[in-house]
Image (cartoon, rainbow, N blue to C red; front, side, top):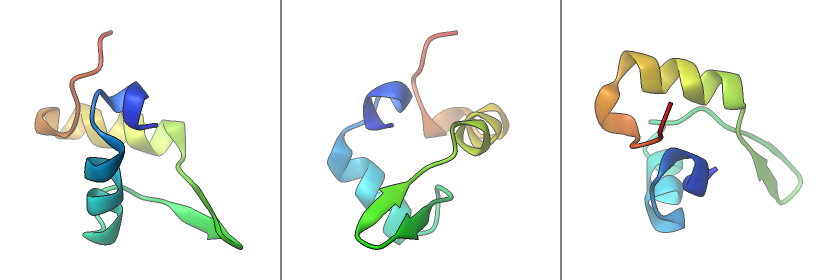
Length: 52
């Protein structure tokens, strides 16, 4: 997802900890909903630098 958003993995983890990006966890695996991330990016242009 970090590559999809155009950010570093470190930034994505930081945003997860700050509850900026929605996520869910099953065991040790962390998942992000592409739809939720796209909705977030559309509402907050600063969130990502992805190309349309």
